[in-house]
Amino acid sequence: MSQLNFSELFKTTHEEHHSNLVNKSRFILSIGYYFFVMLIIASFIFILFDQLGDTSIPSLKETITPQVEVDRLFDQYENLVVVLPNAIISDFVKYTTYPFNDSYFMIVYQDFDDFIDVDGVPNILPTYIVSALELSTIDVATQKSLIPEELLGYDVIETIQINDYLTFTSFTNSIINFIVYLLLFPVLFFLLRPYLIKDIQDAKSYQAKWVGLIISGYLYVLAGNIFANVLSQFVYLVTGREQVEAVNQTIIMESLQGNGAILMIVSAVILGPIVEELIFRKAFFGIISNQKIAVIVSSLTFGLIHVLAEPTFTDLLINIIPYVVMGFVFGYIYTKQNKNLFVVTVVHMLTNLISIISILLIF
Image (cartoon, rainbow, N blue to C red; front, side, top):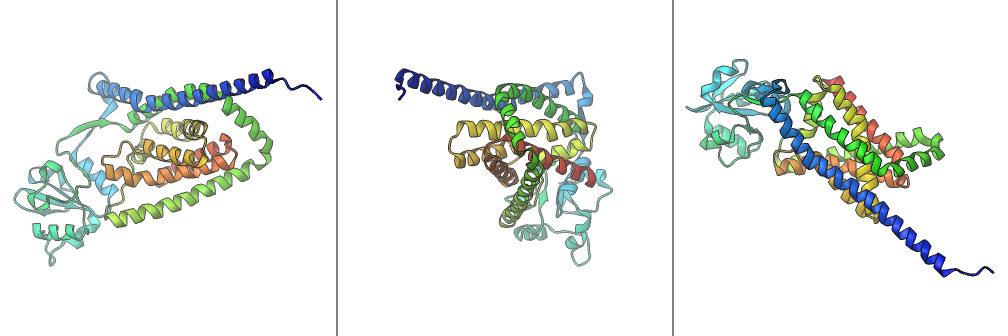
């Protein structure tokens, strides 16, 4: 019988404990760096590009007129009435307009004309609009400081700036997004490289099953999308709000239609999924030992980081739903594969790729 060496036993235990601390520190550093870049550095980059657009590189920005703003609203909402001052009515000759009162006129979604005719006459009384608002049959979009007295007390779903204003072009948004991921990717890859390499090596053991696992993972994503859509529609029904695209999704859609499409595709299909899986799966699950808690925390955080740009808290609560559900789906795939990043990362890439292809085909 061999003699038990207690000194060696405690030495091994100490080394394992030290190794765990080192592992935790890598995860904590990765998460800290991710949020530092996303919340702090990204803000500085935004301010820098804003200054450059106002001074030396004006091409970074584009002028948005009230007409362009209204066009965007009509593309975004189905049932829409826009109330604007009479002073700028001449700028909207291509729209059907209706007198509202002495100070305001209305323009309406073209397929909405029949609804707002009163006895066949295209003239809307303030009392009629207020009555329709109370029944939640129409929504109002107007500059908040210029809301007619008859409409005070009702929710404003969107604001329109009456004067022209400058904003980043879709190409500029693509550049900023790409730069942020360039700052994130190499550092996070360096910090978590041992785990990423190990996961790839382990994945080779089930190489013959890759296709099946990826397809089944994407089926989970489709099921998650259906559930998220049903839940979102229920929330819209209960709140009486019009369905609106998340700001993050709107930026992606606009970027894919502009000069920065390639940069956005690289960010959304390659860099983004790798970075997000390293953080929201590998790092979060690395510091939270309870898998159920890890799934919940990582999913909520994953959702929140995608909706920080929402204009109102209500929009945030509604638009966070599909992102949180996707966080749960990716978390489930990750745990189902014994915390191996390979399959979930490929499924994430495939999900984003198919979404982008769909956007490009539709628009």
